[in-house]
Image (cartoon, rainbow, N blue to C red):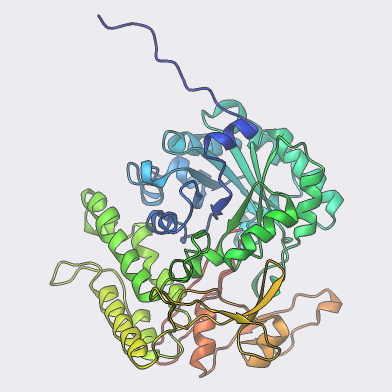
Length: 482
């Protein structure tokens, strides 16, 4: 006989109990606008510890709450939030508690937590009054977080940027936590640090916040994570519970790989590209077929393919401009073969051929077991490569161009010197306090063109629009969210 007793609801955990229920993740894939979609999350999880926490891209709460088409295009259960896609936080930007709650209620059954974006530094966030431009309105922030804390079935979390002083940053963090945030992510950059002015994240401020909060508060650190070694460095320097990576993950989704096998830590871009397209083909496309082809082609896992491949292959593209041109002209679309990924498969086939030819002419050094010996050699002043410190010992790291690796963005002075950045005539100096306009100009240097195509920030959502690639006449936008 069936019981009339209603099923017991799962208790909503808080603080460290909540964090432990997720598997106590120390590695976190950041929320990235149009970049942390399902297919990319699945790829990242394959190359990260099994308890890695992933965030969705940032969604607009009002649109998500009121527009079914936007909601379906942004987050599509049972694909999004399925078992292979957990643990998962869904992130929203918002300035209206009721809209935020309604939006969050749609995703709550399919995620482990809902995150409020308080870090987006872009002009669109200023106009819409959300993201980092809420940080002057603490009353509104309290109402947004407390609304979810009181009325949502899953925990609420938040991601902030540091303020002008460490003391004010701490006070801000305490307010967010007191409002009900069960996990706090601190991006160690201010709202003004974006674009070529991104600069280094301040781990000292994150450490100050950590040291002055109760130990039961769970804190993630974001910023300055380009190499795998940076993860432990950040944990040690900040005392955080976990480390979040945005741009580092985009250029090498194996950045969190804990295996000491160099092949796994710096995968070849042809092999990883193959795996990525296979995930889209086998894990995503079948679940989208009921949408119909038009909506299928608008799914985030499909529209994100091109920007992801530009980043994965960023060191190959300046050397083989035919691939850059082919990729710039590619898109997922209906074809006579019926394969919507046909154009990207053609790009990958060319990349595979290029790398095969390179390795036949310049084979890698291998050890006795036939494994690549890796990119590190004892440090020598003036030697080629990046200096890396491991356990107190310095090395020169030179990753072959056909392996996934981070992108180093030039400082403003370096960018201007290279010609990648120009100041328009009549622009006022920063000392006057007047707005300083900047113009992106890639000229005819294809390497610089590729750099501009890859203009995205570690946790900063910088948008670069209308960048013309010489010989293609196409523009590409790169977006990563704060």
